[in-house]
Length: 408
Image (cartoon, rainbow, N blue to C red; front, side):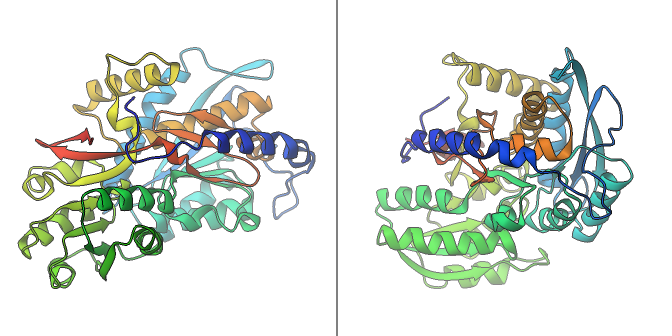
């Protein structure tokens, strides 16, 4: 795994969070988590030898560019885990996925989350590749007290913590991404940039984070333009973003919007560098249609993009290499956004093993003890922190000849 670029180590934060998790764990486990109808959460298991995970993803619709990748990753990880099963107490359980396509519709995502929790009695929920579908699932998961691991990028998903006790977020925090990006921009002596941000919660997080990060490095944010929610045409937004002739443009969006925005910016006359947040790192962004526009662009992303088979020596690096090999063999190429889904399944399996139970309340409590190196990057959950990949997992990458490569 390549050493992250322009990053600073915060390994001590993991130790602090791990200690906090241990301190408060007994209190968390001692509480009986009640359903709204009075039943103890998670006492009805679908099968005595199963860990059943409800998967609620964008398999069709605009969010499919990310949702399909997550589903593929989950299937690979479940197949690996089920070779021997996962030890939970005195049983070895297999993992079963109950998969639903929310069609990129938040209302459908909420309906399906309710069905998975009530009718199918899943032990946990995973999904929501977009911020909007994730927030719809959050409301259901918190009300019905089902652990939910969100795969979306928006800082408000797991906050405020007092109202999100069953909610976890795997993607990096916007502030960590923006600070890494700002240092990169400053190092290239770029003085004025424009921000083209997605409509909605993901874009909102980006705007707030970028404003603060650029102020800290004395880079002028010339203008902020939001992409239309419809996704139909980005020409007008791109034209407004480049009207002041910025030295560079930050595109804070998710695929497929990231690639379409890059094309629109090039058509509008921008010839300077483009900077993407992690939401851009999907197959669609490097498609033939987008390739000329994104060549030479930069992205801040977890270090799973930089696996090098010659230096894979640690357990985490070897696991990354194996996952990437299997993913590429099955699907032709590896996508950097995929591993979040794999990590979510692994985190739940680990929590079940540590808790010696698949009870929803105990899973929630033991998720708070997970301090681990996953396929995508490092996580340090605690009762005081339910979201965000560790910032030292982030690196800087550039598009070179149609592929993401480490930047140095």
